[in-house]
Image (cartoon, rainbow, N blue to C red; front, side):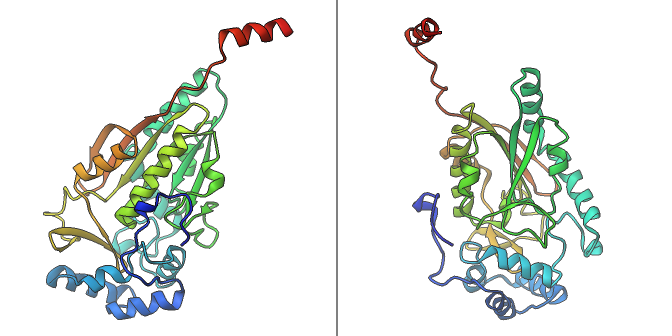
Length: 313
């Protein structure tokens, strides 16, 4: 995991070691006490009841793990459907069925609300085409929604292509690829059910890069919609979360990531330069943050320069 675009203050590993290979990830899973779906459920039930150790929290921390290999192992061991929203009874469901559930979730959360509005405004003003960047493509569930707008093109980044099931540009969970950062046509960034799989520092690093990307596009502004289970407002009635030292964590196949308070999340987005236009709290624990950001207005040619050019013509 090379440090590149991200601000160094966010690039913090919780341990000195990193887990890079498939075998190292499998060894970590076995060290935690599971190697398949059944034993993972037993492990998770145990830590919810008895608590979790610092070692458990750190072992597969996403800041320390090769995420491409991690998600390959998750698929290999059938740890449920990638880009979830599929209950235990429906695990190993066909991809179309997984996408159907996730599409309903994304519609309910209004994940593409801003992208659809931007598409309509640009179409009405005859301003041509634009791009929507999705962070964490999964099985390409949002692509059809984005490209239902005839003037919108979907661009995705993900830690995996999941055996060719998406056409995403690969990234490491930290750095948005340079070719994407230089794309001046990206006016909207969306993400659904992804940021809960990242450490707090990874989330902050991506917020900062998304802000830089949108302020640098052809209109010097854009929208960011992130829907994720990173907020702790639903922890008391929800028994899926593990508490350690007054903090709550969600566990994805042995990978623990910390929940934040909604005020912390709002501060992180504001620190990156975003104005939050709406927050949608769902009863399943997902929270959607809709944001806008604007950089300096594009420079206009001076009146004298314009007149001089007209004379030359």
